[in-house]
Image (cartoon, rainbow over all chains, first blue to last red; front, side, top):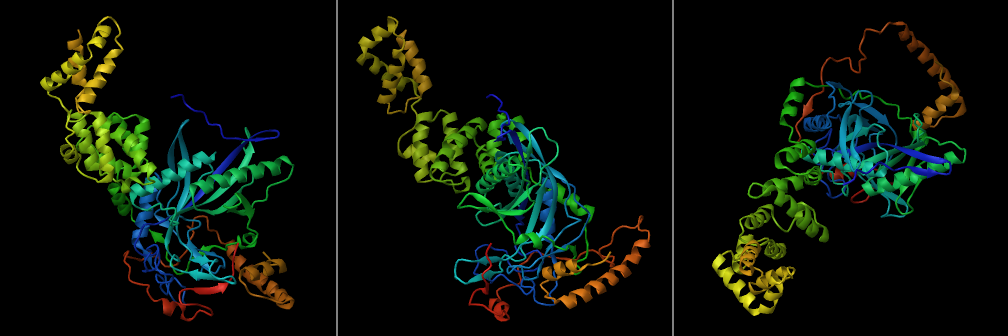
Length: 488
Length: 95
């Protein structure tokens, strides 16, 4: 495959523009209870049933931090190959909004829990390093619902106080495609670690997108705009494309970009200014007097480091080195933890290369067709592996295997049972096959003569006839061998 | 540093505290003199002192990740000026 070249630029009236993107990803920490209170974080509960007096900011309530949320964030930091700060501080970020009962969000400002790290992306034009600026812990806000009542908004505080990790990238991304790869990789790392479920539909992963543009060749960054709270990769990509074009138009007409917060309008596919945020941007951060500084013991970090599971990059290297897979195949298998789990379950019993092919070609086709994820696969890893094993052992042909695979989709039965019930076992008895071959040849004597006088293409015809007579059960390799001898 | 009238207006708006012109004038003077008093601290050399966010030399106490709270909706909603059975009800805020 020819190496592709990076080619995402905005073509303006007087030259090419480069797009500079940085992401602030908000990832919900996978925990049972909230960051500073003991109420549940479970998604989809009745409104306001997972709210404590702390979450609703009753006077006199004090926050007590969840140890597990700290450890989850450290693990994520380690997964991003980042520095873990032994001293960090919680600050109050002050603003008024109906779904923020405290009047401030507890966040981390000057001293975050996690410092600089990196994420490696496998782009079609080679690997790309994306710097991580920081990761800090903060509270989520509640949810305002605007579409039940025409005159009022309804507030549900179930999400209020749930722990979020804000992961801030450096402005290293250069195209919507790189954003796609980056978010997927980040999500994959966190799912391997078990620190965030990455469920974008349920809002467990959202992002603020910072976009600026500059002429190709310029070394200074342009003025950036921040697009708030985009909750799907597709919308992030659409918002970036639109915003970059908007900025190029403004700059080319000789005007300046105002640094501002914008909102992506999904229906209109445009971004618009959130003027109300302008003045509120003065957040008056200060250390939260209710919370002491967070001092970590190096022993805890070492312990968590030892417990880290194998992450996608390491797994990929191992698959390439030890399993003889191509980088392309390895990348697909490690892209989601569930896919690599499925593969590793299969190869306990069967050939690695064949397992890879069956997963990435046949199984993926079925999953795509039915819009399923691999964890919802109608065929279990164990059964697919036993199907592959039967092919390797010569018990069934590849063609029969595909028929059996079809049947396995309906009922996840052991393929051995299907093969037995349907009498699909491959015929590998040379004597039996010889009988069929001779029968086919005697019925087609004219063609045998043509073959022997040079029309070698007819060989395929004979194979086909043998397969037909055997109802597809004949072992094709053996059939070939026998035919060659008999036709001499 | 002096706190001029515009700064007072800005802070009062952020804090949602409404002030009349006379109060703004007084507050500007008061806040400026408070700032001036605090600025005396700048004379101290802090080159060799680490920034401090708490005067208590202790680390944050943590709790276990257990669900032991919530399910008190009626109590939570009780003091709300406006509510229905499930939600806090507030004037429409839409961006």
